[in-house]
Amino acid sequence: MTDKKIKNIFVEGAISTSFIADSIAKHSSKKEIGGHSIFLGQVRADDIDGKVVSAIDYTAYQETALAQMHEIREAIFNKYPLTCMHVYQSLGTIKVGEICLFVFTSSAHRKPAIAACEEIVERLKAELPIWGKEIFEDGTHQWKENK
Amino acid sequence: MEINILSFGKIAEFITINRLDTDEIFDTDGLKQQLEKTYPQLKEIKYKLALNKQIVQKNIELLPGDVVAIMPPFSGG
Picture: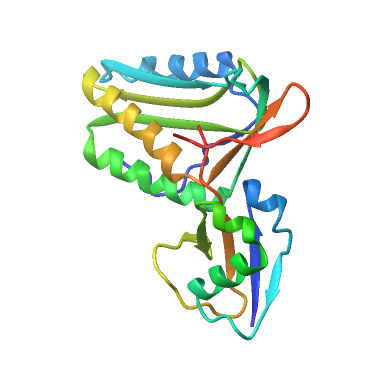
């Protein structure tokens, strides 16, 4: 069930809604699936001390992040009866309102898909060496920290 | 001994060297001490090291040519 080769999760730029729609459509031939769970991360116009975020610039230590994601993927497939798992994280500058994270899990029944999706998002945020630089409307920046 | 240095995120704004040549560093704990002495700002950050792409969990011996990444708290997603 699990893939042995290390999959790339990084995409340059925002994740388009047409890409997300196509990903969903590709699963219509997998007749054993009964439920999908999707998490979409969107860049928020945070107001920090009167300054408003206009974009987040994402960078990553890519090889280490992909190795870490591979471990998470294996652990999730061992823990939940999933049919599919897809993870996409943006790199580069993503504007407010655009999608920067797409996590998509599928299983025969809803509960494993929902639980796995949530666990992937939490682990990705905590364990993958990825950094978001919040760019304010006035051109200054600060480094985001996950809570 | 020569060690390759990679810095990320806000740490890359003040640690801009890519190489460290020293005879006084033997392990990752020693490297941390040296870095915190040279860059006091580092002490304010909960950073992690990766040695040759593996995240460092405990003190590890360094060898010439090793690649050490200095990583601030993650903020992906």
